Image (cartoon, rainbow, N blue to C red):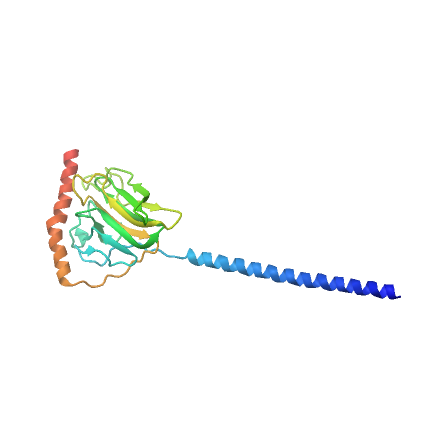
Amino acid sequence: MKAFLTTLLALAALFANAEAQALSDGNTAGSSILTLQAQTTDLSSAQAVTSEPITFEGWSDGTVLTTQYANVNFNGAVVLTAASAGGTLDDASYPPHSGTNVIYDPNAPLTLTFSSPVSFVNGYFTYANGLVMTAYGSNGQVVGTAEGANLYNWVDPSDPSANPPPNELIGISLSSASISSVIISSVDNTLGYGAFVADDISFTGSINLNPVPEPSSTILLGAAFLAGSCRYGFRRIRAGRRSRS
């Protein structure tokens, strides 16, 4: 009889240990699922960074862009407004991708410096002498390049279908956020700058903010600058094309 009771007690202890182990395993599994769900949520949040194309709309013809947009500094960028909207841009040959404004580089390559490294940058370009985009890392090293598909894609008003389509999408995309700046220029600058226009530029975290009103003196200086260089520059481009043809 004593042996029988001893056996029953041993079996009861065994079942109790098994039940406790099962509960422990269940709690561990539940913790793992919650951790996985938390990681998935974090990844979703990281990938939820939105990027709005910068359209350059709302700025006056001749506005010099520097720090007007969040997360990026522009250097060498001047706003042009379509002639059809009262500006100085020859939009018959260099049509904006959207709206009526574009930017161009009258005196130097167009440079974008980001407030923090980005993983991609792109835009729509119409050009007369090729186009090259070079991306640089935080130490000034080249981390990526992209070129236009053609030597030119401006629109010839006398034969609009003669050249490749304008507003070519050109950009650089990397697997990590390692682009600190990009420089965009013509393939050959011996004919001078101002040989391309850019529109709807996007990059990681780009924001298309509404313009802040500028002092009238800045606008007047921009208009005077444009009269002296912009119109001459685009006429020179067209003259250069004719001389090469």
